[in-house]
Image 1 (cartoon, helix red, strand yellow):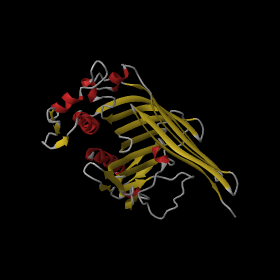
Image 2: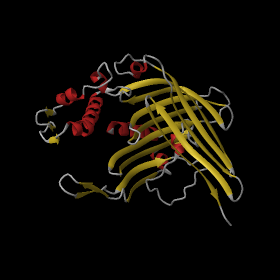
Image 3: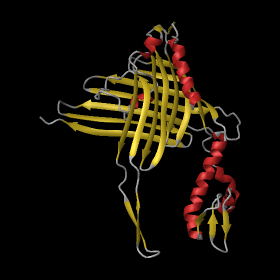
Image 4: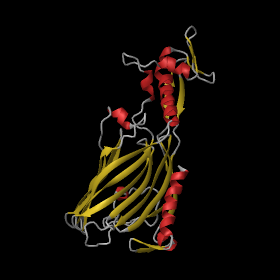
Length: 362
């Protein structure tokens, strides 16, 4: 993880050296100009306490308490706001969610970047989310359709604890501008991630579709004494005194720990893909539309044992992402809006959206 952050910082610093790049003079001062460093802590009450009653040895009551939720965010960002994005708050508080950050092309030509880490706890579960990217949008307006200035570059690292997805991606693309609002792009994308599709439990599957879970647990250091109905973990602690508890409570945790351990043992894989995309942006004070999409229809098969091709019967597959931001002020009273993005990579998908209506009464 540290290496990825260092790579992004090196990219930023390399662009900060005194030189002329795509028609722009860059130095450290211009690199940091208009950027914002922010750190914030947010917290609040989580789930309320729950009373659990038991009658095993007379009536007894225990209380399950969930610790408070919190979110600690630290980041550095320099991203030009699109016309529909108004910074209503005086400070960045770490809860911002800008859908346009996922777009391939920024609002202005030149360098934009985001480095953000979130440490959070929600409903008693700890997560670490990270989103870092460097985006270069080049469009100097030369007349030649093949002008080298019509290019886009993006380096991105994403870790989403809720979606259980984590990858590093670099893409370089040639852009063809259909007109001032619409552009198409084509290029290559390179993604570094764990071998998604690999299921460590496949080797434990029996011919009838069941899994030999007890033998797996024994291999992982658990011990089963059938005569006394005693089940112990690798440290010797009793974790169950009946087969029902063993199967319903302990075994699911054994399987979860085993799959996580086996996946962590594997090296990350790099996936080279052809990427096709588009960007559309049109804004006025009464209506705006910002849309983008990316499709990866072909992926190079490296022949690796854990390549996703092997988990897809050797066939190609489609990975894609898209975003849409739409708003309209119907009149001085009424307005509608929709914002959302969707991603599907390998066998993972994650998305979020919001929509609504505003009516000003006066």
